[in-house]
Length: 321
Ligand code: PMV
Image 1: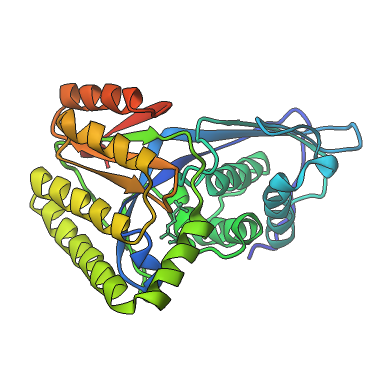
Image 2: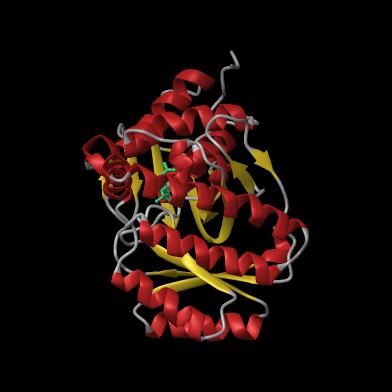
């Protein structure tokens, strides 16, 4: 990486942004090397501002904690790591800074909140020091921070929160970026229950040990549906994509990572005219996604999901990604 050193002017402010991510299809099976489709989700995002200070200590302002960085709770260890790794690998100055984090990405809902904040933070630092960071450098630094936040990481959150294109992701092969550009809307609703990714992944692992055949059938089916979904997207067949999403939810249910609250929101979306709906991410909480042919239906679905217990929601016009 770069050997350059940077001149600091205290009046400068560095700004960095990042978006959230949504897994469209294929979660859980992806752990066992089946493909998944993940998309950038700009409707929920993070902005970080950084400026040098001369108080002799770095400060952070965020929704979890505001105060000196060195006294911040463990939940912000990932950010301390991102700063340290950025400084050492990009030779940024060791100076005191004020960090302001504004984020509309709910934490623990499978939307990549921690990765997005780290991405925005490293971009803000790079912006402050006038450094044009490359994607591979950004992803290397954020992955170190994500290991702190989540212990093990597939790298999916880092990849999607730092790039602008949907991706077909499979552990054993390089990610394949593609475009959706489909005349349809994606509605995302927050069930208000924190997602429990590690518990859900553990549950699937146990099920796989106890009932290997049943689990293999479900995962083969999910893998197959993801392949079919890529073809449906290519053919701009929104109805088929919706159908596949709903089947995917059914198989996630078989893997026992849904719950009654998520099912209720999925059903509400369905009854309001969704072409398909499913949980997204680890499950056992987190978010539900639904697909609609037009804006009016998307609004109707959003209202129905909120009435069914969701606490906040977003939309994405799939023509834009
Ligand atoms: O809850 P999220 O968005 O972190 O998604 C987890 C997706 C899983 O497939 C369940 C786990 C993984 O590491 O891919």
